[in-house]
Amino acid sequence: MNELIQKAFSYVDYIVKPPLQELGGILADNVKFLRYKNQVRLINKTQEFHEKKGIKPKQIPIKTFYEILESSSLEENETLQDMWAALLANATDMDSRTDFSEVFVKILSELSQEEALFLYARWTEFKKTPDATIMIIHVNDVIRSLGHEPDDSTAEKSGDKLKADVILNNLERLGIIKESSTHPKFSLRNYRVTHLGMLFLEKCNYNV
Image 1 (cartoon, rainbow, N blue to C red):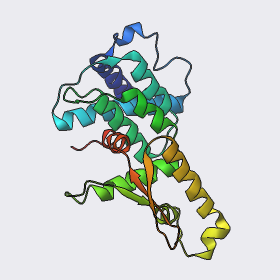
Image 2 (image 1 turned 120 degrees about the vertical axis):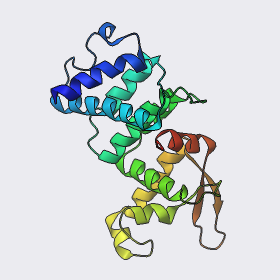
Image 3 (image 1 turned 180 degrees about the horizontal axis):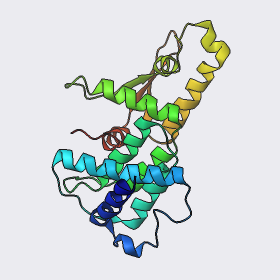
């Protein structure tokens, strides 16, 4: 563990300004072991992403680094940890042409685990179709992600249909999706992932 910690501290100087010694011990100051461990893991994962892609990272403002570090420090889900690491890796990617880091940090921090994992799964599926340009989300997709079929009576009893509405409302509030159409006969809602949403999902994934 000590070796991993030292490795993390050493790498921070490459991606943050000012250098680590000027940060007042941000990584270790009054944080519990869980948070500290996750922070170290985040930095080492970011370095791993960079090395696999073979790029030299650029430095980012301390504010952006701190917000990512703090927001991700209590996350134990491995997929979400990877999303945070990908966000940091892309923010510090010298070849990155867009910089919405602060916006994306806010969005990811305001997603529940269910919402983030649902988006991650849908994005992964979407990327399997190279020619696809528009990403559509249906209310039934969300219900299925919660473990039920839309016409399953247990979905109604368990509250998953209501939960699906809450998830979609939050994704729409954050600007990730926008309602695109409603089936005239069945009143089934379709949502299109917005341009902002597509950029967000791209930056929360790291193709190596």
